[in-house]
Length: 301
Image 1: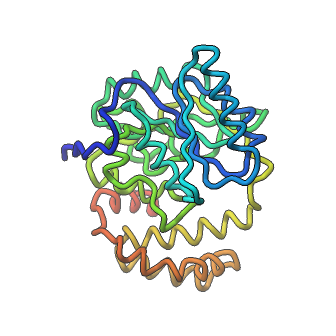
Image 2: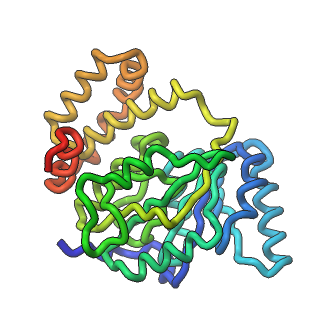
């Protein structure tokens, strides 16, 4: 399948990479991370009530005085959740977009390496990087899973094929990312990468893990509790299933959540009001996505 070109939603994209940061009420984190970003940056503020805007303006002024790459602030006026990254991608004028959280940044030279990988692989729509966590720079366990992808490596891609990613360690080709709708407001935040992955694979694009491209993530002390995050992940996995998985799968996952641990039951209760919206955005399941998921679930190709 040949990947679609997709319509542009911003001025014609030029070469290079724009870092897109979605943030809310984490001014202290941004003070540390914004100066570390190479190249142009778009910060999308999800309605912060702290000093976020002042911090972004200060960094933008510093870049102007030093002749550095531009930093732009976009303020939608409300908390968009994960779709705030779409706003940043739409504002970008480069071919590639590298997502970062307010508590993460890209290693020096990482984005130049990513640009070379995209240039050499026209089918590549998403590059998942090696993510080093905390001061100890421990490898994010998700990266271990991506490196061991059971589907192997497509001959036209620079690393193992993946069926998932971590947003703060990901570079995307802007056009296909926006063509599949980017992140959606059904899931808001927490596991929002899943549906984007399914849609890119279904459209014939390549997604690869590249260990040589590195991102750093120092989780903010202002992050929510682990229990709350597990509840959100349970909620959003169910909603994604109702949007993209076969109905029998969505029903089975819903039943398991109803009989599962307390966090899964709370996730189900939280998901229920959003199910009608999820169903309105439902697409037919992708044969290729389901094939890969069966490999994960059964261990057989």
